[in-house]
Image (cartoon, rainbow, N blue to C red; front, side, top):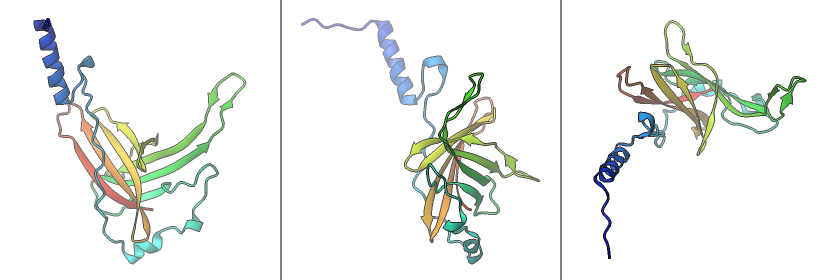
Length: 193
């Protein structure tokens, strides 16, 4: 039996690939390929006050969609009035399942799915992050990523039922660019309509 030994160059390449895999980086174009973290298990929010319960819309007060009956749509507000993170998220469901084309051949649609429009805590008025289409991440989660140049922020949304109310969990992962130098961080907050 003949034993084949790799060349010295192949051995160093293999070692480099192993180190890169352990570090969670990609050798392609020198970019990181590590996936951003996913939200951990939820920690139950504190019980709402009677006033907060009274402000919640009843099922009959909400409109119904023809192509689905989403539970996530609405104008959500942070239950912590002193938050330093996300103060509000508007979630809407697009239900245009028809492709429309004009006589020039320009087409739009179909467009079925959730959109999110978050607002970050700023002074004197909250910062409008803009409306983006979401991606279904499975397990009831939807996600959109906002790029601000100095950082990208992944915003994950999911509803939970506690105390007879529907809460929106808003989990964010802020990934700063190497040039910015700040440490990446996550936030995990609860909102009610």
